[in-house]
Length: 373
Ligand code: PMP
Image (cartoon, rainbow, N blue to C red; front, side, top):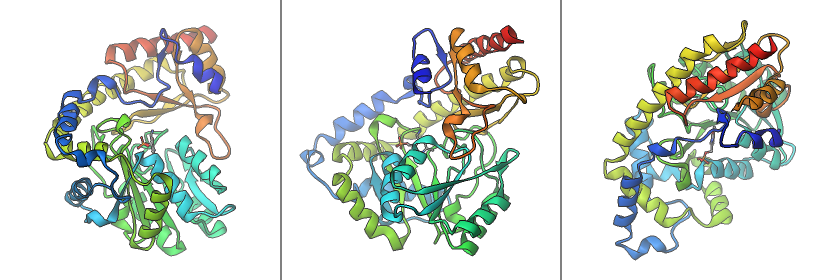
């Protein structure tokens, strides 16, 4: 699969395989101004605390609180991307052989992190387009998991969002079965339609640790994320952070805080949302005309991904080989599986091309099926 995906990077390929934000939408001027401003103080080049820049934590806490989840700066630990947050939580919460539950399919790098920690990873299957809540309850009862890892909003890879009822039920199951939830929310603010939903942390505050990130809303190269911890693990997670890298870059945190406070982040995020909404629409409009009869796909209200299920008997890896011969690419869904992959599934990302280029790429994809009948 690695070799196949390497072929998607040829310049002539229109690749829906990546999971990258669109670089032309980075607010380079705003971010440059923030770095210039904070460099007025040499302290930004000094070591700093493991928990993170107080001003940045204040600002992130303020945004959570406005969003309906009361949060203090002391609840937050700044991490080097939310990927480090996943690693720190695995280190803090898991012993080799512990069982955890994940969504099937699941964000690939989270699976890798949990595998590295020696976890026994059990996938909770979907029921149609939604999480199978009965299965979650049953698997929690059978395995007594340390935690359930979920991306509840615009999930990577499916684009799926757990609705309000599902969120309430997940919170209830966590309470009754006594496990933690790790709620990974890098896409929450990339909403293009529909109403915002309460986070799981709002519904079961004592059970939920949330991860956040600026990667999809400012820029991933900043490598700034955070853990919103519960009080019982705050000091252990802080010690794990200190052991991992002392602290996240002082200057990057200071610049991010300055950028947020400067008021430039909101208009920049509006531009990102507007562009991605148009790109999502272009993809969703084209899909019915290019996918083979009998395919189904998600219609996400936000995020970066659409998840396709090809008709009975199809194989997305074989389809990728054919697609590459026509210079178009996607990721087969088997890459995101914790257990029993569905060979008919694939992930399409809609963020990095203009609507016209998306239509061109999808029309190449349509020709792929046509060629094989
Ligand atoms: N969680 C999910 C669900 C993601 O999709 C990603 C990035 N693709 C991450 C975490 C890691 O993000 P970061 O850049 O903040 O480390």
